[in-house]
Figure 1 (cartoon, rainbow, N blue to C red):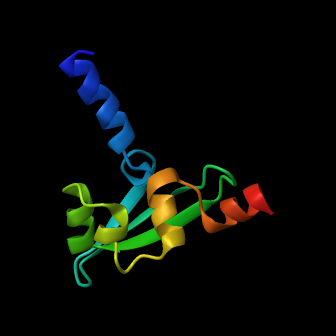
Figure 2 (cartoon, rainbow, N blue to C red):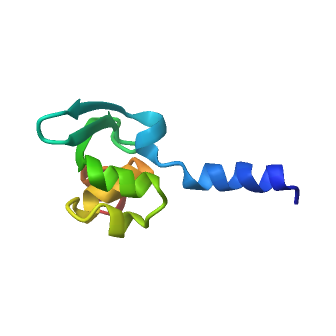
Length: 93
């Protein structure tokens, strides 16, 4: 495996759903970012709000559960996979 191929694969694995499939609004007063995008299962818009300092930690490579401490597990799943809580219910109910 070449170095170039390795980094291409790693880049694909490390891409989070919010970075490629969502829009965001920055709230300067609260220091937050609200990402909104379609759930991959339902197609309905879903939003997650993340503190700027936590988003920084996530983008620097911290594990999602360590970086996004104030974000629920369900919302962290949307950040990674694009599946909302309603989408999970639809998949596994």
